[in-house]
Image (tube, rainbow, N blue to C red; front, side):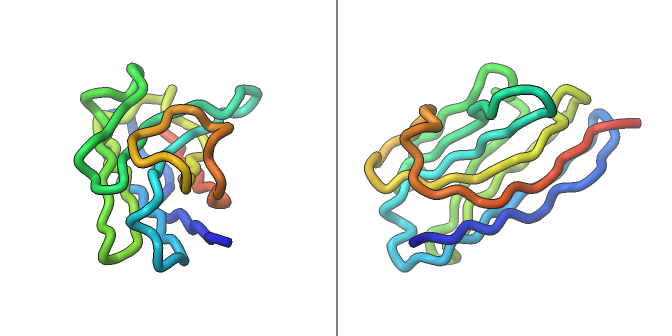
Length: 125
């Protein structure tokens, strides 16, 4: 069982930045593909960004490409999501997830095995 704990959410003005972190409780962290997803009120959970085992390969939803950056530190068992130029439509609960079966970036939420509890991001003036 892998536990994922997100942090770093909060209230930010449009155009601002936030950095989300997700710490994992597994010694095999480097063997998991990782992803960030988000869910706004009344909407389905959607893919945001994903990263491969090594961190060399990443993939982004078109809505965040060029503004968000996913990265990982396997020595610290942590994955990050740097969010810049935030917009009100980025408001959602953000979840990190771990996939034990895929080495590369994975955009399919149903294939992820473990999920964090989520952290709220609110973009508003």
